[in-house]
Image (cartoon, rainbow, N blue to C red):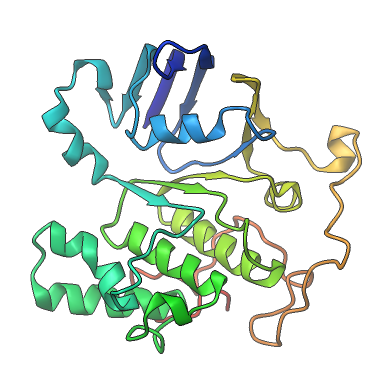
Length: 274
């Protein structure tokens, strides 16, 4: 699905911000991207989303080597990637429905199909009753849900999320991560950049760790008893208590086990948090 081989990136004539990056993401995998501020996470995300081309090395996406592709072929490749931005990037003058429908309209999808797909998707993320509102009246967590819906409405093969839980509370963070988990169960490759080591430790997914522009680690994030290190602490006020439906995150921990009760492809209106 994704392969980086000795990739480097520099802006203009400045120093390299990424150096000798090599890794491979299998189709249907779920990875976290972590690292301190200034480590190069944003630059790596730009390469993954085709916003930048590497200064050196080879990047292969969906079996196609970028160095051999003409620029005219990039839009088609980008349509196979869904991007969730930390700052949402919603259009405030358009309703929630129209923000999510925009990628389909650009692709020339029929109006009837747009109505059906967007309505079902917004119901799935829990915003069925908000679809006619404008983004400024939504909470930060609701805006992030709209951004996720917009990113997945075209059924991309790869989803790249930049700090999707960075500006929201713990309860909404759990809801958003469960959405990514369910999308991954359906075969979508997911990459989530985050500083939230509490969530990383709970999900036990492979971690790509950047440090000073180099890939420091690409391994399973082991639980404390296996890794011989203390568990990341929850925020000072602890995980937020969730209402009775969905269940408390402590009682229903995040995991990646399949749940036969939930398949948005069969019924997108099912509650993703059960």
